[in-house]
Image 1 (cartoon, rainbow, N blue to C red):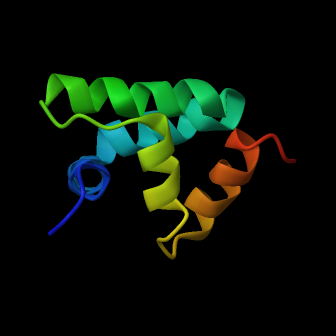
Image 2 (image 1 turned 90 degrees about the horizontal axis):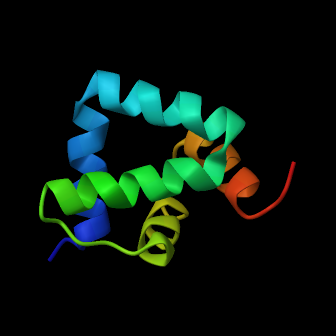
Length: 76
C-alpha cells in the first residue's frame, strides 16, 4: 500500500508546472518548498508531515531531489 507521501509525490511529479514551481522554491528556500508540498497535500486531502515527505523522498532515485534534501537538512 502506497504511503500518502508517495501518492502526493506522484501527483506533483505528473504536474509539470507544480513540480517546476517547487524546484524553483527549493533552490532559494528548501524548507519553504517542503511546507508547500504539505500544503498541496492538504488541498488534495492527502495529509502528510514534513518528516514523511523527507523520508519518502530520500528513498527515491532522483539526483535533483537528493540535492534538494541535502539543502533541507542544512547542507550545501
